[in-house]
Image 1 (tube, one colour):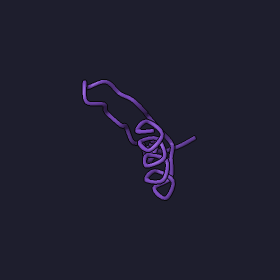
Image 2 (cartoon, helix red, strand yellow):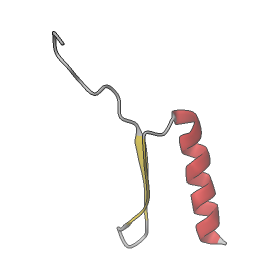
Image 3 (cartoon, rainbow, N blue to C red):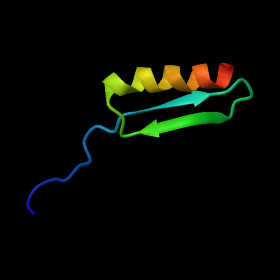
Length: 47
């Protein structure tokens, strides 16, 4: 193809634990799902 190629926007979030390790990493997640998934993960870890 012609022109400049690019990936576009890559959305994601990471939950980092108290010791600095990555506890949960989500990529290609929609903004609407991001908060819900993060809260579910944190609630599951607290239980």
